[in-house]
Image (cartoon, rainbow, N blue to C red; front, side, top):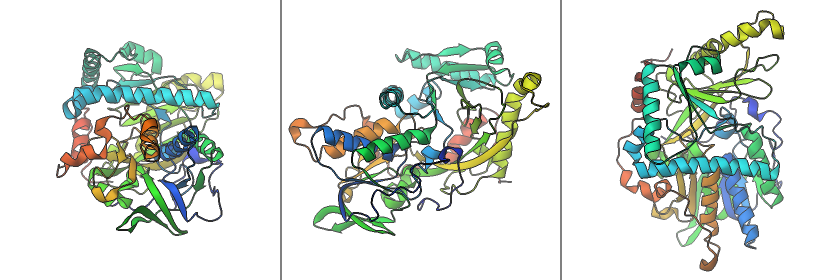
Length: 476
């Protein structure tokens, strides 16, 4: 499907409060010509721009980089997620090995953990205040079958030579850690919680200091060739057109609009998140957690606000093929509130006297928002030049299709795609390495997937059915 361009009046996430780059425009008018246009200003777009300018500076290469954002800075999926970095671990291990092969699954797992480490190092190096907390994440199971499958996946991962840290919690330990009988088991893995938009704003500010031109509220409506003899592109916007030598598409769920050739391979999927009032809320858990095969995820911020997302399975469409983040679904809101209050009821009850909560038995939800994820046919990101996928798209690159895992993927993907672009400007003797990129990420690797039938709703339904969750046949 054609996802169009981002909705001009989206729902308002907590993360975008007090956005310092909300309406930023480095220049009052658009430049007529630049070297590189990056479309999108989320974690992928911001990181691509930063790495382009940082590496160009180190190579003494003057480079004009322009970032175009349809709305405010970081207004897409990165500014609307649940505040987690949860790299791939054991969950779905056996299934991923069947679909992608063990070699790719092992490489992807290492890639995501390496990305998380890069983000931690970057935040420490630059002193970025984004509430980054490497407190881990617990993959929990609510049913015996899910718990058995999760343990089998862990054993298979270890058999494959992946020795990532894992704490196995039985039902008694889960009861102790969560003060809830909701879970029969869990595995604590490396992971982080953070304020994602603050990380992106910091990356953009570092890029601005290196000469980035950032233009918010400047949607790109189309990209056309200058002529059949000219390998440059004309980027069309309501504020004017820009001529660019290279284009990097970092719009994730919306990539299929500007590059129609990608539309059959990408699906926009809407996710929904709620946030509670932080005042006087007890500390429930210092770590993040996900359950129901990762469809649901929750964490608590330092001020004790709880952020909980997921439950798109309460709609008949599983929120698939929708790119509208201006609305939220009441059925999903109510489901999130109910499960969150069930999960925290015991702790709230015990905390009433000590915290003077006046017999408060439920958390007060004060914010609800939605965001659009970009899922690819094979659940792997698209990273690299598009001319290997479609010959006419020479000098256009893509970095997106993160399939709900943008935080543990995009930062390193952006670094690698920026190197690919810069290598077009650098002599062969000083080419930047791109060996860390998985070959399966390249658009050219998808050529043999043409014509493959893709039914993401049926795949999700099968996963949920194993948990005893039935997706409604019609939306309420």
